[in-house]
Length: 260
Image (tube, rainbow, N blue to C red; front, side):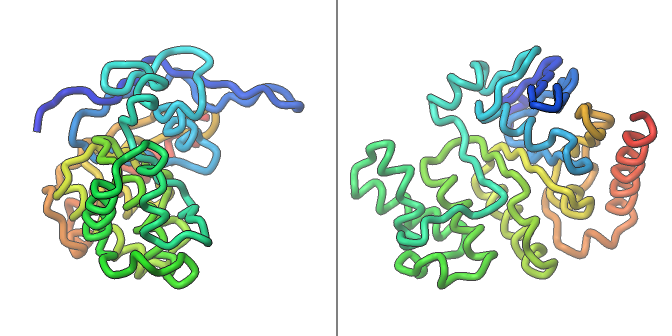
């Protein structure tokens, strides 16, 4: 993989104007994400993790500073369909089958039917949902619905995957399984992934880089380059190397609260 920068934020700040006064969501956030990295964002609720992700996706607009995606503005990158976005909730349409939900962005983009069918088959296989394309969302477990949501984001083969705490509502056993599957998917596709989480073990297990953020206004208090190998069985979480990184994340979160 090359070290080309895919996402670059330079002194990014965002303030929301509300009836109760301004809310400073982000302050002077600067960060580069390179091609093929898996970068997790962790911090307390309300620290701006999701806001930062939404700025990358052109769903929020900075008050000051700048952000580029693939060397162009976030708006241009959105128009070029440079990324897929996975939300906290699966957001599947209940009247559409799983295949129909995955096919939806392809229909909007005007893909031909044979190409759509091939893409749906390929991404359902990637998330281990082959054979479920004719099922409806209510017939699947929460974990399977999230996998379908990931498949939908992968369907048009964007190089960047933005994931906003997609496994936060799932139980620990299902979450562990999906973490393993996501690492396998990342290894197979070599996509660049930006991932929001509240879980220290999840951030350490998944990431090549962990970005620790402070309470509002959201600032970056630490950027941790993971020393762990890319091939990571679940039991790596019991190793001294894993626990050392988790300790540094925890210290970064604590320092953010103290500094605030």
